[in-house]
Amino acid sequence: MLRRLNILLLEVGGDIVDGVGIYPEQKEELVIRDIHKQYSKFYEYLSMIPDYIEIIIMPGNHDATRQAEPQPAISEDFVQEYYDDPRIHMTGNPLTAELHGVRVVSYHGRSLDDIISAIPGMSYTKPAKAMLSLLKKRHLSPIYGGRVPLAPENTDYLILEELPEILHMGHVHTFDYLTYRNTLVINSGTFQSQTSFQKKVNLQPTPGKIPVIDLQTLKIVKMEFI
Image 1 (tube, one colour):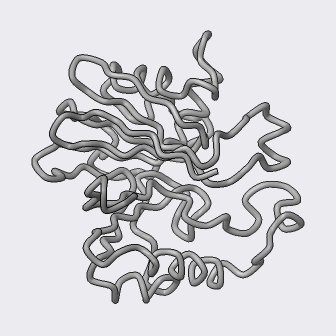
Image 2 (cartoon, rainbow, N blue to C red; image 1 turned 60 degrees about the horizontal axis):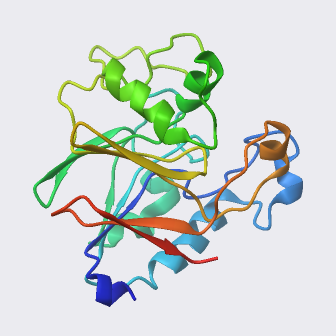
């Protein structure tokens, strides 16, 4: 299936592991309770991906890097084998890149929690609508003092100075997308079923629904693995 779709690039938008102690009683749900072993297990999965596919990995709030945004790439202290693999590109959060001629802005999406709670009509079931509000505001985290800690950098790396052709986020574990003025706005979902914490906050993930994007047409093929 992968070869038939001619996939050349895989982007992982953060939270590549569960982490430890991210939410109350999380430890009781973990199969692997050591974060180093979590990263090693994920690398085993990455090793199964065909060699011709390049991989981009950025951090999320569950990963072993600072919580304040913008986030630096996950340190080599945790993922040395990732840095040793020439196919894997470890980046910070957010990321702006030109992929095969397409301008892409990727952001893990933690500010969606603030937007969904602050603006009437927003919900975790339709995160693309909340993402669109960030696109219109030209800022990835416009609410100060909310759930997103912001680092006091000299430059604001969360400003959208130019509109991307693709705005990609994750965080809320829900597959959703829309197109607005030639920009594809997409939340790429998750492989994890609902946790006890997500149940408490009424977040219902859509596991196993993964988008494949044709970078020539920006059309989406939805692959379902579960």
